[in-house]
Amino acid sequence: MGQFDGKVVYITGLARGQGRNHAIRFAEEGASIIGLDIAGPVADHTTYPHATADDLAETIREVESVGGKILARQGDTRDLAFQEQLVADGVEQFGAIDHVIANAGILTWGQSWELTEAQFTDVLDVNVVGTWKTLRAVLPSMIEGGRGGSIVVVSSSAGLKAMPLQASYTASKYALTGMAQTVAKEVGEYKIRVNTIHPYAVDTPMAFEDTSAQHAFTIEKYKPHFAPILNDPFFSTRDEVTAMVMFLCSDAARTITASQFSMDQGSTKV
Image 1: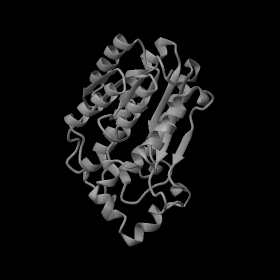
Image 2 (image 1 turned 135 degrees about the horizontal axis):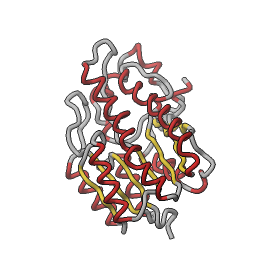
Image 3 (image 1 turned 45 degrees about the horizontal axis):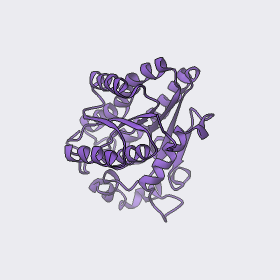
């Protein structure tokens, strides 16, 4: 018996990193997975390696290797019609959607007056508009299904504390925090809960293979803004983030909604 036997989980950005980890762990606990990933370049100004179609195929393979069922497709969260079709096909195959993890996002770096227009609008489009389109695609089915459920929106420590060199990212993650609270107030009557999680650094390629991030953390005048309370460990593991997500989707969190959960080594309190 798994903790999520019979449940269906919709995950964006599941080709690797946190999204893949969520998919595998939920599958191990009995859930069926519906998901998507752009699995290719998103913008030419990001400075970390992008996910690939091979990464997406590996996620599917790993979910199936633990006995899970998965419907995953290559696509963009900014494409509402694509997400609506994926939801429709997933509900036809698995019967419902119980939990949603809005995980897809991108990051770029630069001083606010030096960012290009693309660096600002691309991040807002993916992180905010893409997340809204995810919620727009899944909520009608969740409401109609009448099973309640949980939505976890992946924000960031930058959604609680403004970070230098991250004007577009910080703006997007603050927006997600507010959006989640609004949606929570609208869907509470349907027993759907909506919360945000706020990691700092996580052991993923997006965090640890970003050359711009590595440079930013060496800039002396900005170091105090980046310093967390806990330096050891400086980062969260993917399993630690998944554990928080699974808790928020579990019956143990049935009274929790419109809340923010920091996993930030205390960085937002410095």
